[in-house]
Image (cartoon, rainbow, N blue to C red):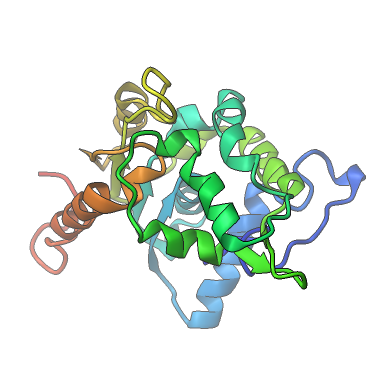
Length: 248
């Protein structure tokens, strides 16, 4: 699912009087997810999301518990819902709102991004970035997301009471975390092990799993393989006597 303002979904502009988040509040994103579930005829779903998507999954579970069976949260925690995250993700957002003469030029910029520092390049990542751009008439490309919309979504995150939201989540949660440097050696991760475990400790039914990589590289290569293994193990008990989710 491409959320509003991202990918091939609609990208409405917000009116100034709507506030910093405009129409990119968590409630707006949740309404989009509910609309999709309704369209697909899904009364209850297992929701999963990475980063912002992980926070949105927690928000959905807290506010619409009847629609959410269990959660997969990839590298999201209370700590990511803080102004500090604005600074950490600036390198990732710098590519937005720009025109690139070719896709290859865009991809070369991505390869130099600090969050891919010293990472053995995985060609699979190119499929993500190819879907991330749209062609222009001159043969170039431009990223589909716009900086103002992503900034508004971040304001929507910061406006919420995340401790209250997480306290309301009763569904089983699989929280997967990568603690590699989000940049050159010595750079902090987006979510440290301590920060992830703090969030896991606030959830009554949560399994914490660590995988290699950082916030981005965890989704590819060795990190991706371990994520799949963790999901398979966590959900293997479905349909058995383990009726309490992930609790042993």
